[in-house]
View 1 (spheres, rainbow, N blue to C red):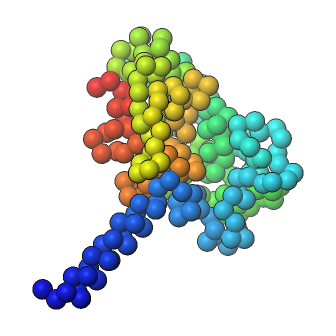
View 2: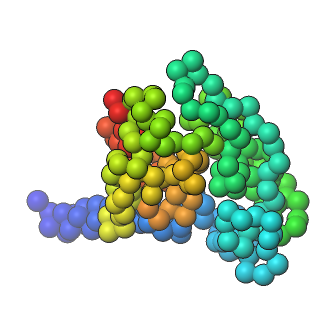
View 3: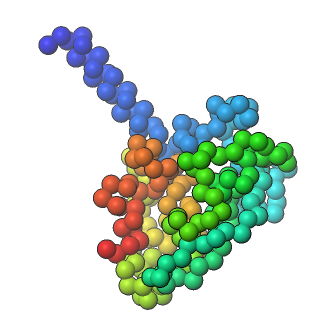
Length: 218
């Protein structure tokens, strides 16, 4: 075997692995890294956060800078659902302020933008075909439904590599006791498994349906 070719192959493979690993646990290089977008001015945080003159009406995120959606959504329905469905909570509305496709991603700082989110990432205002959000997930629901774990008792681990966190579903995946967008996704890509899974900023791997089985007792 040619030693030089072998060394080059090993180095190439190592760089590939490191690059893939770098997709998780950092905002840089993630789907929310907008530094290459012309409208960002090369800044990472500006589309969502600002150090001065932020929107003080938004209490679900610090120093908010993006235009907030005012949409009323068509909610998920199912003959088997036991939860009492409600409109997405404030946490989810931050996400939907880009992902419902009604507000441009570059509408921030009081400026109305023109760059809309891609079709692949546009959830629209009808959420009937998406996992339900905005409902209370608690011990009572798990007892009534029977096929979901008690969120106060079920332990999960989110993240990957050296950046992980272990705790209950209630502590790590719910917001004020409710299921929201950030129950499954980490918008800052900190406690995620990276882009190599084919899913966006998810807290647990899709392999073996691990993310689903964090809550669903199947």
